[in-house]
Image (cartoon, rainbow, N blue to C red; front, side):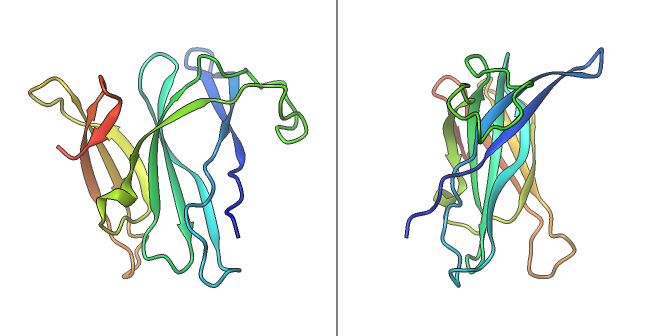
Length: 168
């Protein structure tokens, strides 16, 4: 059994002054990272946080959950809106697929590689710059008032020149 491809979702761009939506972009989610146990168990992948990363660039956090897996799979992508089509007037992404360019994305970090249980990361922000001039990127999860979940704060260094995020 192969994991099905991820869904297409819309990213909305707003003009702060006019408070109007002036563009929308199609973003292709990754497939759910792991098969659920049992096979018909819950599984989902979606965007849980977005952070501005420069002119028309975003850091996008995808959070994937599959029943039976002890933790979530968290992936962080650097996304570029520059060559993506403005789909604001596109009614159906599914029916009109192929008539527009999706947002390009590059994987910067897969938290599965940390070899620690990661909970439901829902926030991202920049922290203090390091002495070398690189930004720190902070991630936060909450425990949803559940004894089975953890509140976590994770801090990484963004090596912008090599487009990587790593533990400082």
